[in-house]
Image 1 (cartoon, one colour):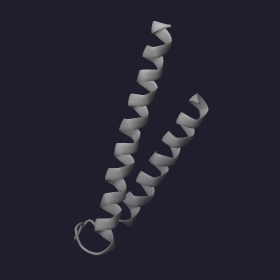
Image 2: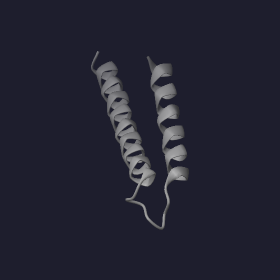
Image 3: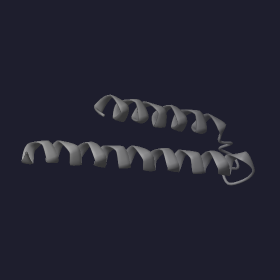
Length: 64
């Protein structure tokens, strides 16, 4: 499960970097740039969820 967590974390980071390259910074809310911004935000949400999951697993292991 720990390896899967790291793999998903790496995929989220790669998707964030890819979407950052797709943003037109002169008009960030028009056309495909808005889709890329949504992709960046969703990648950040995925990272937060994975970190929370990892922390909850470590707390669960300490309790047992």
